[in-house]
Length: 571
Ligand code: ATP
Ligand code: MG
Image (cartoon, rainbow, N blue to C red; front, side, top):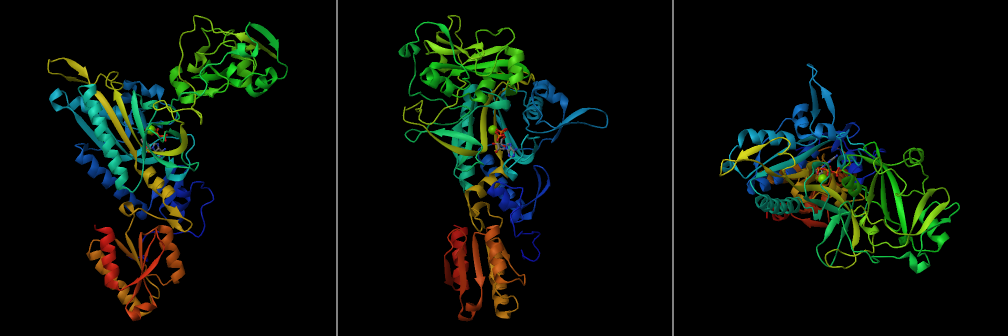
């Protein structure tokens, strides 16, 4: 490819609407063009990277026995109504009507369609197990599209779905997919960590997310992990052993229940200072609206609510904290003084965190302004507790009891054991050995293809631009004649360019008449792994050879430079 012909426009400045470095670099280096919020054109350079990632995925998925298909992107409401998700999937599902007034949607994921296709075709246990996948555009009307390709509205996903006759067989395939994912990301030059996670809207019991770890804000997930064993989990799923398991208000002289004045005390911190007690002696109430109904979450004072866990415990699709006026309306109370005791439990759902179980003689809101109850104990009929708290640094690994650490992660892939979550409501069944109809036991496995491209840039860049891992670089080598008007330089550069292409090495020649400085800047910005510069030293038979990731320049003969490329690229 000649640089003069390459359909690319690099920019001098970063775009001013970008926060994430991958977003800034993808735009500035001419990989993507924005059409609308969260919707981008992948320019030829980006498309080459996406193709490389997709091909790695294909090779690995095919090698694991999965088969590629391609399902419709525009889908009728019926199939979503069958699974029950038409009502449950929130605003991320972009709905529209066709000319006949039929309700349709743009696919955010394909469980429904694949389940209906497979149940039409694989009617016998003899056709199972089965794993089918596709690489395709998805649309999710994300509430906050941001960070460029990391959280787009339209994005590319590889999604695979497997169908089994037993849980054991699903677990076998789950392990195969886990290994396949590790190979895929390794081949993309990306180190990932498989962490336990919540299964969210897709559902099911067991799931792992493949995280590219980062310490920047673009890692939208908090990941807790243990250095001593291999425990790691998304904060929406992480559990821990607490440093102090139980607390007793009696230690502070509160061994009898009574109401005390707590003037102007609003926060847990205020209250603990005012009463001179530890925060973990306070039973905190946090009020929510869950799917437009009131709920309160009760948790030990020093702990915070993990909202995904709470959402699961409430079996809700959407939750948000209550506003002051709603606290008055639904709980007849005021923030800071809420009590679970005085609410009408037929109207307000109350969820207790596991940390509340061991609390004795605690402090609790009196449901009255400026008043709290001390020396309180849970009523005996409260027997149901849930894990709705977020792990804190300083708590201990649930497996080996060593301190947990925290980092951030970009979720590039996700594997789930779905079980019969879709097959049952959709009545997707096969006939087993005994002629009985059984619902398929399913798994599903996603990879964000466009997100993986962006995550690689988050990991591999410097002040000058992108540093592509060789396996997914748009091109391998750029050959730069310093002075295109010098016939010797131009001719030698052409010769090297042609030779490399003949060898199957993907090479660009920067044949533009721009200054060398401009060409070097673009080469670094776009991130070609290898740069060969043909300048004045060609009169001594030497060219400059530079690896993008190292920066050190070597003087080599053209033949040696070509050999070096082969060694690096074709090993
Ligand atoms: P997230 O929690 O980041 O919103 P998700 O868990 O909803 O993602 P899945 O349904 O598991 O996403 O989709 C499979 C993969 O698709 C994810 O692991 C991620 O890599 C990618 N993906 C999901 N949403 C987006 C998006 N808005 N933009 C780009 N890639 C995405
Ligand atoms: Mg996910």
